[in-house]
Image (tube, rainbow, N blue to C red; front, side, top):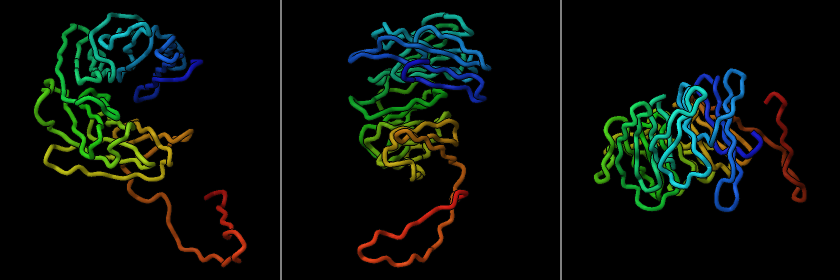
Length: 277
């Protein structure tokens, strides 16, 4: 698309991909380009893409000139249909008729594209946070703000209330991490910090989340993203790693090896690996 990509999404079957890239100055986006790849055909999308529905038929877009985080336009089947209210710090399209969005103050809106009906509430998010995640299904949301226990809100039925404890929790050992992602159904939460990825189950309050540590992502690992409920992608510098959370066996076997001693003025003995590993 000719500029740095700041949004990328695809349908589960991989037949539709949407990407958006922006040019920025010191304060704001100057211009954006968005495109859709569908079965080998490339289509320009007006404005900046911010969400894609699972079917690929609906895209939520925003204008670079919009200052307030309070509305998105709906691009469906190649046509700009209408503008609907939605917070856009976190936004998703669970289906072709629903927009779920939050802002940095905990205000959440679920909007029907067809009827325009808006359900809204506010959750207790405090002031500043390190990062947050809204599940692609729009059913759950969480954020990190310096604690090892993370609160998880449910949006799948009625809107949550500002006061009171959340019914769900997850865990992490990277309490200051900005790398955070909920799986599509909100059943797992991944965070990253100090080169370690932590994957937690999301459980009812009062239960203990199961926390798994994934090592080997790289010391500079900064981002994680679920590509399915059981597959995870991590980013470290220019490297990308794919994790299968359903597999628990080792990828290799460790065996002892006897190495010849070296002289005190020599370097360590060389170790070589065969081309086939």
